Image 1 (cartoon, rainbow, N blue to C red):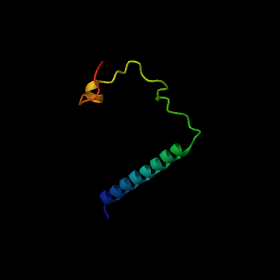
Image 2: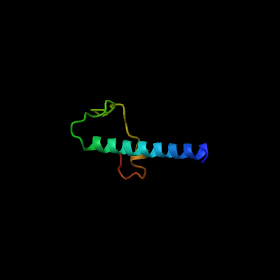
Image 3: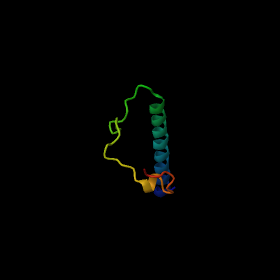
Image 4: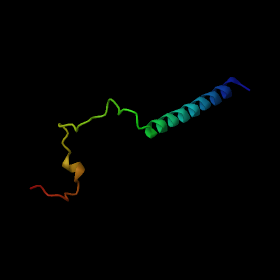
Length: 65
């Protein structure tokens, strides 16, 4: 057996192992109630964010007063 098939299967095995570990870690975090929220998550809405009417109401269902 040559070197290329060995490297191919080793890389594939490592990728599958990493995916399974990542899935296990994510499910563990979702099931845990003790984890803090992400430090990147906002606690209040961004006051500068103004939704664009063309995106939120593209068919003009609501009328401006």
